[in-house]
Image 1 (cartoon, one colour):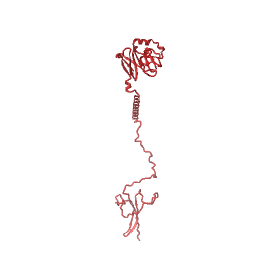
Image 2: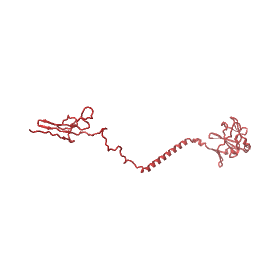
Image 3: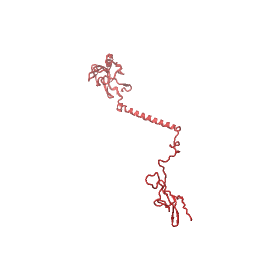
Image 4: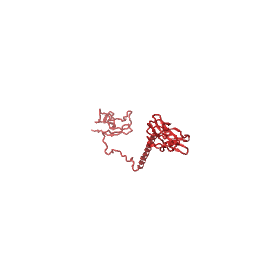
Length: 276
């Protein structure tokens, strides 16, 4: 009696296998109801895996024409298939932990000149900015233009006759200018100035004997004295009764000091007096 032996073999179809509209390859005599092997790590019911290509199972069956051999076949998916590892995958021991960036690193010796140049430039810019800030701050504290315009005052001496007073305004204060006569000069210098309340010689208060320049502010409480008045023929303060002589020295009353003498000079070529 003759015996028949079924033969099994594994065949892998080429990528040119025709596929159905559902994406399943069209291969006759394949058991499409077969499922992938059960994955013990999967959750829920067993079913086809999404990360593995489907495997089709078959076997030997008997037909009218005789025995037919069915084969096991693994068909590649029609779409791009990429296998990915999860976080529990085994790490490669030979993989470096830190990338090597030695090819991108610069040599500090070659860039030393550039570093010095950048640091020096930054220092110069910072110093210029600081200097500009300090200059602007100091300029904001300087006197205004109208005050600087009155810093100096010129007076034409040819317009002041002998024996007369002239009052001008300088820095917001009155200034007395007296063209003294020779008798007034002799009287101012013959007085015993050492016994005065504020001892001061007439020679120390004038640069030229005939010209007396003083601030017209009483040294008691800042009033303006009246010229050619008082007990000594000089100036008299009507506010509190202070008397000054022809040299502007305090002789009587509550005034503690002599009338102040400002800074001034003579312009000999133009016969002018410059105050300030």
